[in-house]
Length: 311
Image 1 (cartoon, rainbow, N blue to C red):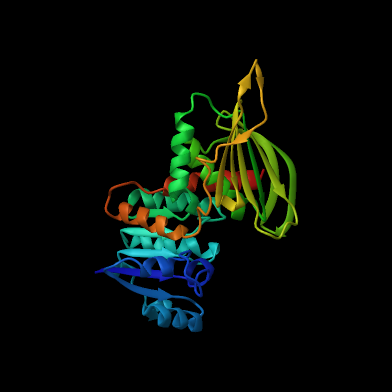
Image 2 (cartoon, rainbow, N blue to C red):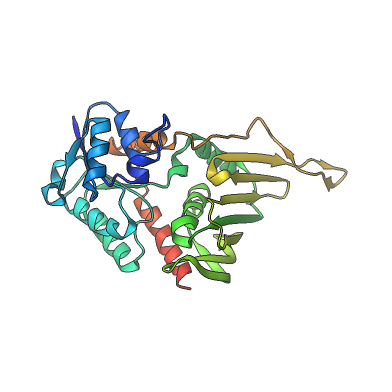
């Protein structure tokens, strides 16, 4: 049996799929994996007990009762301002596998300290940017890698904070194009429309050598996240917060490109319907040392976004 600790029973911890048959939380995904001895903790004791009763998990009532060194897996699904403390303690306790929600931290100094701890420790850390683990995005990465030319333009639209929500796009683009370097940045718009410490920022510049235009939609309350990957003769759209990937192409007839047509054979939908299953399939592979983790890559993306935020 593998001893597992889940810290945090909020939306991503337990509630998104509490009353449906989807798999969108850590609690539900863990319940599908055999040979786990699962304990949960939340500052809201009533919530922790409710979740523990539903899944038959052990409920820890006080953080002082937690001995991290007794767990093989630790999942951190708590507010961002607590990530540094739980990550630090878990790495110092040599927990073999740590899964942490994004972003890692809002503070550059904390990120630097965590990087030093990670490099000197034995833990493997998965940062839960869910899209990079989904089969449809793994296929998209292969398609992009097979192309002979780079995109001529990337267009990103997001809302509600550059760190909280643009980070999804930044991580996905880092995964797809193997670079997290934003350069020659020109800030076009900057607004604290939703969070005092996390502005919604619009900017233009380059991701590596690819031109990028990032549009932060101010005062938009509904979830919105789209990416357009434009080539000379084709386009790929990531829409509906990443639930759909649409592929388009243009035929060149007598030297003229015709209007885009959708390649329905490639287009994918309902990608995120049970997204946490793929996350844990990858986490198990990390635990078995079959693949590496994404901690350093995610940390560098986190650093880049904080620098953009403070530009």
